Image 1 (tube, one colour):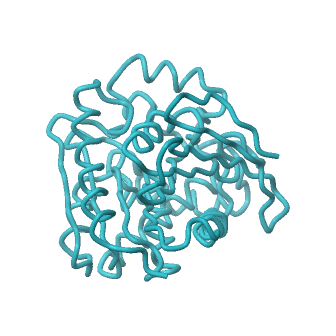
Image 2 (spheres, one colour; image 1 turned 180 degrees about the vertical axis):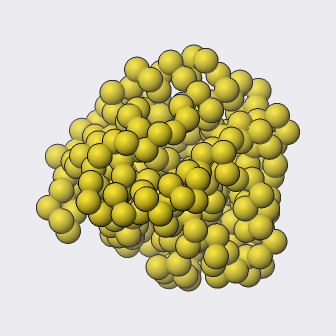
Length: 305
């Protein structure tokens, strides 16, 4: 069932639950321009413990007001979707769910011929890169915001603990026993945004579960080793004061990727939450870079079919 909610004069918002191949209900949503044909399609991949319809709403509205159609999905165990909150049993399942849903939208008759871009934030950046790896020639490009190509050293357990946690993740996969720093405190510069995230019941606030921590470590290590395989056009954005994901690996991604069309923006003094966690003047700088990058590509090329 599709429900319209919170429409304004420029943006049409709709949401719908779908069922994935494992029988779980997943929450999906979309923001569409009202008075114009969309320039292109943008698919949001949200971060760990976050969700689309509330925390990513401001991002979607900015993009729709720039003329784009925006689609989101809450992963299993995240947001309004089914599954144990904050639990990632297999990262590949999240990628498969996103791939199935996003490609089904791209293949609709009204969307054929439109360019299709991925926008991944933090863990969502890893999902975007794996969606590209799964279908190397399918996506028109990706915007990677503080992507989880490597977990920052300050957030990573000691090597001895990694071995112990690997074993415990098999025996006690859902156990919330991984000690970690307060990611909300580290990610978002604006106190008001931290408060909103803490009050959002759809955002997971507990310690990472054993298997979740293992999967995030496994995937980030895998991506870091295979950066040269990235071949799609991309824009990578990273705050120079990010303490959650490692900006050095964003630089390595830019240097090692085989993409002919690649760009990087590093923001002095900015933290991890570039899309909605910074002061307004900083967010405006970030979105100007994103929209300029999108507009140059949407106006000069057609989607590969």
